[in-house]
Length: 300
Image 1 (cartoon, rainbow, N blue to C red):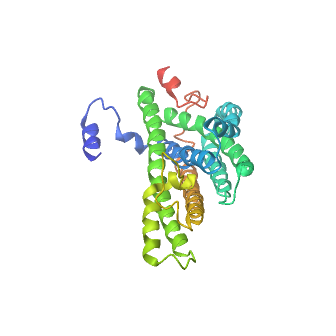
Image 2 (cartoon, rainbow, N blue to C red; image 1 turned 90 degrees about the vertical axis):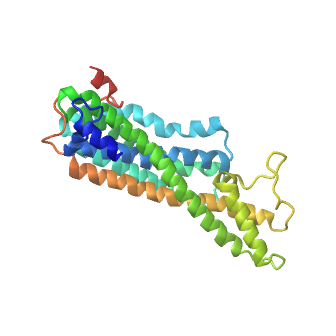
Image 3 (cartoon, rainbow, N blue to C red; image 1 turned 90 degrees about the horizontal axis):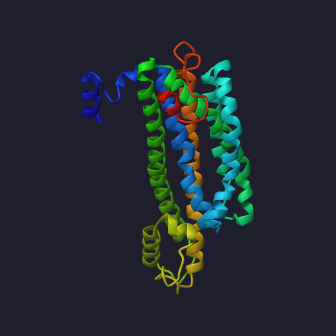
């Protein structure tokens, strides 16, 4: 990364000019794009595991339950694109990310005691997330393209798109690592708390090691025991309890990363409020305003 930045600074026609980030509004839009992807879009991976593995929905049924998050974008994105030229990008960026932050916090109301019918707990959060996401995407593109000179609009649009992609990749990797750490911790505490006289400490340690090695996905399924996934602990008297501990640990870990995702979104909202300025924010007609990633404007 260091070599790339040094080389790009020395080139006459760089692919990515690091000087773009000297512009505070552009940097604010880049941080907003990163935060939206890392704090909201990356959570789709973990929420899909919750809906399919923990609650037992099929892939199609889980996808249908994400519709309340997707549909509001169709209405708020065009509205946000129109409002950007009237009230400016800053309130839409900060406000939209703040709404997404609240939505992710509402998602954290899931519980290890939930059943399929309890998926509706996520419904208000999904609707809010769709509204917030639709409000943020158009001004991100508008600020990114409109805060630089026209000759660098394509570069600015490309960097904005990369910030989104890096945000999603970072969110899945970072939050996934935190989920694994939290899951392992909850499993350890849960198994050690088992009150079984026939289960000595060394046996508990072995069970902990086995459940942790199985990982969060197996834990979300309840450590399945079948011909494809035989469990060496299936015959033990405490197997059902260990299954419940694994499933609960997955949900508790997911709740933890939802709180972290909310912090990421809050940081994005604050950065947008501080960095995006009216003076060097978009020129009239500079952005796409359509909710996409600015590629259409850059091509134009």
